[in-house]
Image (tube, rainbow, N blue to C red; front, side, top):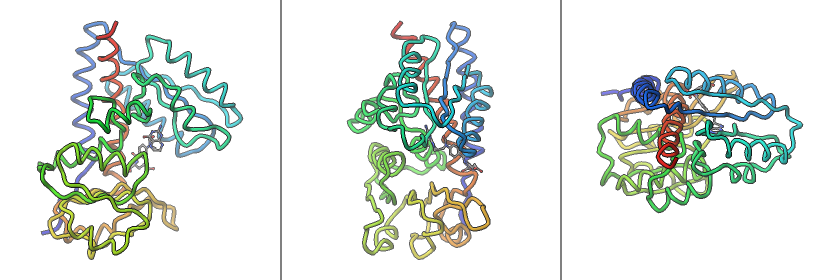
Length: 285
Ligand SMILES: Nc1nc2c(c(=O)[nH]1)N[C@@H](CN(C=O)c1ccc(C(=O)N[C@@H](CCC(=O)O)C(=O)O)cc1)CN2
């Protein structure tokens, strides 16, 4: 039987509906979650993602602002803006859209965000908390992957999960979060020898390698849950994943499409983090 297609759009829609209700309740208590996004430069994809973030905020009732800066903005200017936002009690979440122009250090900028407002979950303190299993703001795409797997009804505990890719933004955190759900996790990467020998053992296969169509049916155990985090443009400019969708659909039990799978979950988990940050900050006031 062909795989059930995991429609991230649908899952994201139902989480947003839950969030809208939660935000309405918070507003009755005088709490309006607020997100500020900083966008530097003219990259069309980044502008499109930031529009998606503003639209998502509006949908669930989060107050959002976007600070647009041109590509010549200096690192010092950016750090100054972040300091001001750190001090502003109406701003619960701060997000700097990546990538930044090459003259700005992403590390310096992300480290300057108050960890309690780091709704991307990229600050080293939040990453450290995630590693030691403390409650913290989790990175959006990896958190979205876990939510998608859970919504299939798949029990993660005890399963063998194989993650391809070891980036700080996806591969490493997804591996940690799967381990936190009591999966046995194998991490594969560009230097892994005989990749199919690992992937064929996976009950859950998360592919975040950034290489179009690198995973075919020969890599997948029949009945596996396959999550494709790849975002690649083919020669025709069309968005394609790391998985050969038509082939793997024949053997997997669940499969995410690209587009429409993990992508829509990223912004939704950001909205969730912003609401969580607002609740935590209200408790401390
Ligand atoms: N500060 C951050 N910067 C970036 C992040 C991030 O999580 N935080 N992730 C990406 C961009 N991104 C959000 O910022 C993002 C990427 C993709 C999608 C999405 O919904 N993709 C759709 C396809 C959209 C299209 O057609 O182009 C999908 O996969 O279905 C949302 C958000 C890098 N920067």
